[in-house]
Length: 307
Image (tube, rainbow, N blue to C red; front, side, top):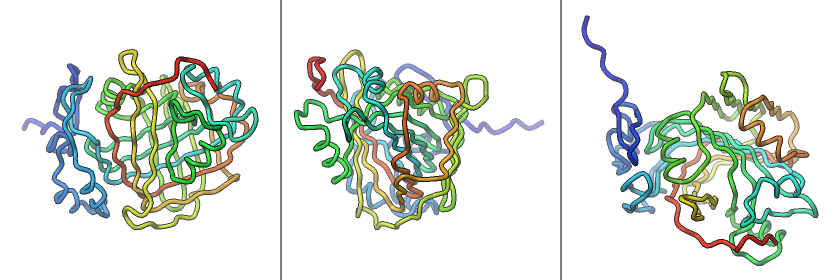
């Protein structure tokens, strides 16, 4: 019998061995992509966004690496919900203050991601996050909220972030300080509907989403670029991570109906329940976009006294 051709190769990241697809983008380029070659992938509509973002080599907990990490074709779905501040503050480190769009209320989100073409190959992801005020910002919460929505730059603290591949887990957990673990995670997003399923430790349902996709609006590359700053601790020190999204096709429904969010018995579901969400105020779906995820940088924080 002829030997089988291996479908994976092993790479080292910060002293840990992970398997990646043989012949995939990470195997071929090690984060230093040939943009002209990637532009020929029929799933990638353009690479112009990335030509404006030169990569830099930096030292990190996972060793020397290039930043930012490029995502050439992604789709996302996000549920934004109101939740009581008391429940939110119980899950936030004291150095962070939640956004307060109304007295006694904050904003939490549940998100699902599908990364079809990226520097570390295909994977899927889910997240539970809390909207927070920018670190060391003394303004009123509603001012921070309006400013963030106006320029598409929000700040968040993530409670859970399961992923579907080992390399995404190692990079995200060891390199960025995010609460990542590997599980079976299916995400499908198109112009008609959104479906997602995150498995718990026993293979059952942790969390699942089913909904119709909001009507999409197409944007030229670079026309609408949003930013998200996430706060994590690495080695006991606070860091901020910048994520820039080039939105190519997206839509929003406010006070949506027909959104089915199912909570099971896993870690994601428990994080959502702990926040006691009250109602969904917005449903955002991006059927096509791109992303540049920068490596975290040290950031100073208040001394633990909440506003």
